[in-house]
Amino acid sequence: MDSDLQPQHAPGLRKRLAELTREINAVEEQLAALDGDAQLELRQPRTFQPVHSPSTPAEKVALFLELFATRRSVFPQRWENARTGKDGYSPVCDNEWHPGI
Image (cartoon, rainbow, N blue to C red):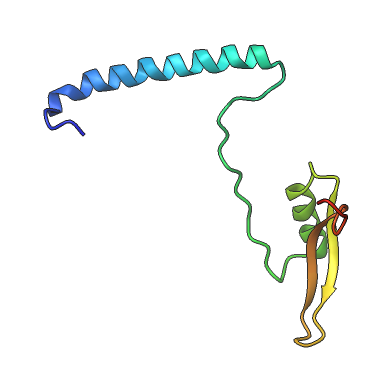
């Protein structure tokens, strides 16, 4: 950071930041026009409510489908651990254990 920055520089820096933001937006629009349907907007990460044991099976399935909706090759697979007695579901791919993957 520059040692010669003073509080009176803040308005100028804010103005420069606004100019750069406008320039970034203009370049993103140009790229979007070139890329066609490509989405170049910055997206905020979606937040999900945690799934608790009291959640109904339908709520859990709905969450799973929402998380993996775009991946048709991913589906739940039931597993059981005979040693510990635990069981559950894990996401797996339809190409699991295929050579070359």
